[in-house]
Image 1 (cartoon, rainbow, N blue to C red):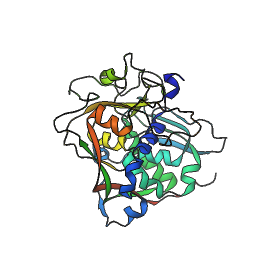
Image 2: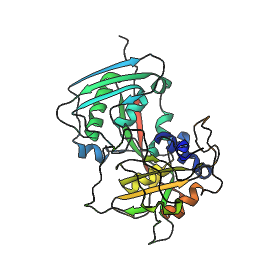
Image 3: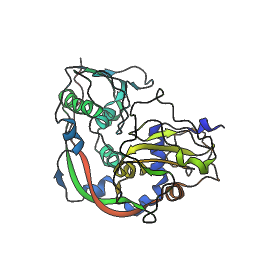
Image 4: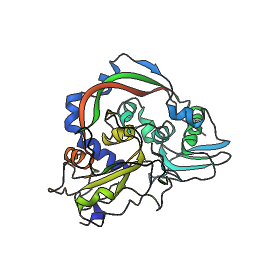
Length: 332
């Protein structure tokens, strides 16, 4: 099997990261029940919503249920929590996605929030699929598109939400040896260019490194702002990374849906890449025919050797996304 055969798309990469940390989860008991048992305090909207301009709405929009066979979903720009975006003159187009995808997009829900978020949803939110076409004046940013989607979901699905801060078990991301970072974690200079528009059509990943694995320190994704899959240096490994992201984003991404909090003390923006050989059953897609490279580093080894970081079970405050109400689209 060649290197390209081991490429996994972004969601599968996140699942593999989650599986890689599963051995630690038993120490945490991070379940919806344990979270719900904590004393909540309501928290304000995230800073990104305020920075994007507060409430906004599309000028026109259509939402239709898609009842065709579940062929591949598509959209005119990535709907993930990162900043990767293709400016489109105010046009939003997405087809064949479940409502949960639109909610994840609209509220920029991070991997650290996903576990509790999914536990609240009625089944139809994850199974019924919808097509959305919408327009807005000008050339809104990705975050402004999110705000418009919030208004659309509130209007068509009566979606009502709020945020709560609760103290729960978390994975703290720490520097393994103070003052020393790994070769694949680099701080960005403020003036270096970093495009968030993909240079190749999605979902093609960044190319494999021309040098052996030990020379991966200079290889990061081509596009900035989000966790992206990359072609590994050898079969049987997974590789991914991001450019121009915060340590908060890295902490959340590396736990792939677990509750990761940034406690490195590092400030600013970073580029990073990570390659590891996942354990069997570590969130890999079924029937993927993935053959693990027995010579490759484990997730924990790669975290330490490539990034100079480690995860430690602790407790901490987490902003949770709470669904108050959602109803099905009225029949036409």
